[in-house]
Image (cartoon, rainbow, N blue to C red; front, side, top):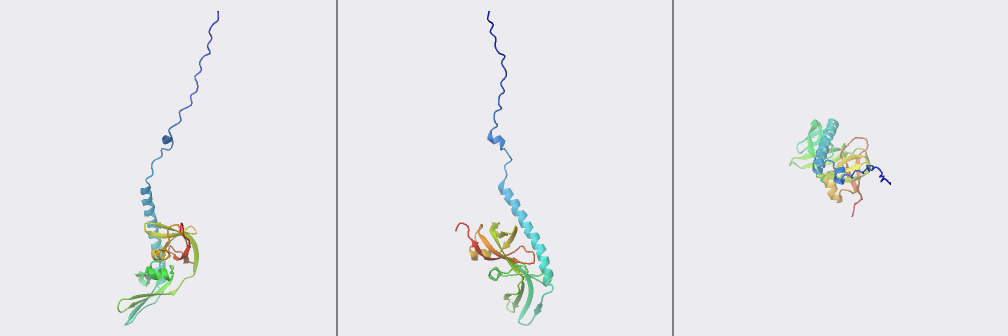
Length: 196
C-alpha cells in the first residue's frame, strides 16, 4: 500500500514589505522661512559686531587728525568707515553715498569735511589708503548688497549697485584696503552680468 508521503511544509521566508517611501524619508519638515529669518538675524549681528570693531579702529586713527574752526567754515578730518566719516572724539558724519560710490572710497581713507557757514557739507578725499582689487559675486540679503570675494563678504553701497545696474549673481570687481581689514568695498565695475 502506497503511503502518501508529503514533504513537510517549510515556512517560506517572506520578504518584508518595503516601507512606504514617505516613511523612509519622514524627516522633520524644515521651516525654510524660519531658517532664513535666523540666518538674516545672524548676518545682521555679525555686521553690527564688525561695525563696532572697525569703528573703534577708525576712531583711534581719527584721533590724530586735524580739526579747525574759522569764521566762514569749520574743517574736520576723519576716516571713512564704509558709510560714514569717523572724526576725532568718535563723532560720525554721513558721507553722501553718491560721492562715496563715484570716488570709490574704501574704509580707512582720510577725508576732509568742510562745513560752510550756511551748513553746507563738502567732503574731499585727502588720504587714500593702499588698495587691491578682487573679483566676487553679488548677493542680496534683507535689502543689503554684499560681494563674496576670496571667501569673505564685503558690503557695498546701493548707489554703486544702481549706478552699474548690477543684479544678484553678477560678477563684480571690487576695491578693498590692501593692508587693513574691512567689511566694506567699493565697486569698480561689472565683470559679467548673469543672464543678460
